[in-house]
Length: 89
Image (cartoon, rainbow, N blue to C red; front, side):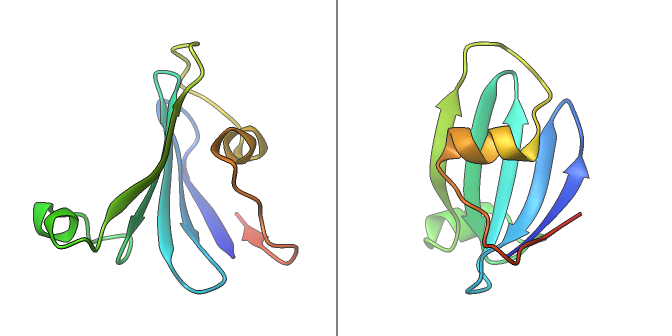
C-alpha cells in the first residue's frame, strides 16, 4: 500500500493505493470523511460513477465540522488499516 498526502487541511486528503493496486481517494472536510475508489487519481467523471468504475466505500461524520485530521485518525474512523510495509509520504 502507498499513501501520499495531497493536502494537509481544509480538506485533509490523500491518494492511496491498496496492495492490489486499487486507487483510493481519502478526504476529510467539515468533519466528514470519505473513502472513494476510482480507476486512478486523475479519473473521476460522471461516467466513471455511472459505469461502476468509481464508488463510495466509506462515509462518516465526526460532528466536529473540522477541516484537519491526521492519517492515523482518518484510517481509524474509516475502518482502514495500513499494510505493514506501506509507504506513507
